[in-house]
Length: 392
Image (cartoon, rainbow, N blue to C red):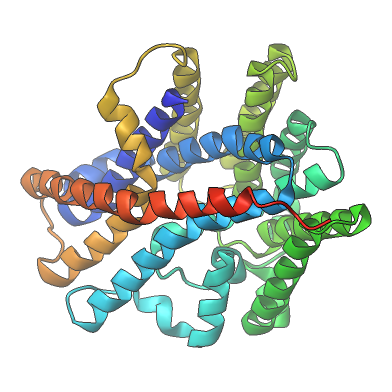
């Protein structure tokens, strides 16, 4: 799995550059972004990697309960630590929190973040990068849904269906406002309803009786699809493309391990790419240069993943796989460090390569420490709890 770590490491570096360039490489960013959307490149690589490995984790365990325990202890400890650090630094006056974060009550905002569905519940992310975790959580719910109804082997079909829906979503999306569900029932009530539905879905899907497991799985899958399609802050087509890309990663994993054919994976890849590029071209409301930057980033992300897959049997540099090991820390902590720099030295109008390099030099050792003392212990606890026998 070293090549997956390499993919994560590359994606993390690109995302960090995308965000830090606002502060230290503004002139270069203005030239680069119209041609290559670095943020979308990095997150699409992350989504492909997640799609490749997450369903395999569930199927290897064979138990929904163990899957959710593993996910909780993988995702939440560092996330909680990063948010806590940001709030603490803000209270002492050396870090800035997003200006739009105080627009709703603290209780509902906190509840939305606990579910990790805040991006799909019209709640500003306390850390900007947390928006991708909402789509990760939606993917987890869909994967569990397919597993409970025994359709988890149909990854290619899921990817194709979602890609097709993205391609034809323009007509429906044009009739609906952004975050349509929140607008219809209110953000607070929707957060409460979605949180209850998510808890019920996870508990039932992790239960013993098959009928209850199926009910919980289907409830979670429906919740995920409805929120992504009708309440995301990104366009409907892009939300559906994100889910399609993750299931494409799963289809590739199945082909590599002999549970499907490479012909099916190749055909799925072609269709998903065609629908994604077509959706970006026809449904995007942005300027032509914004569409071009998104399309180039998306195609390069898929090409990068394919290149890594082709090199999966080769020995890769240890520093690159090591970077992938700490990539989650890199991803979550760099906005905290950026908040500190924004609150102290501010943003620069002209390019400053020295500060850009210094940002990485400071960030990476911190991430090594958080991986060792927060991520790794959390994962160990998760594995220990996931191995406990379930009650009959």
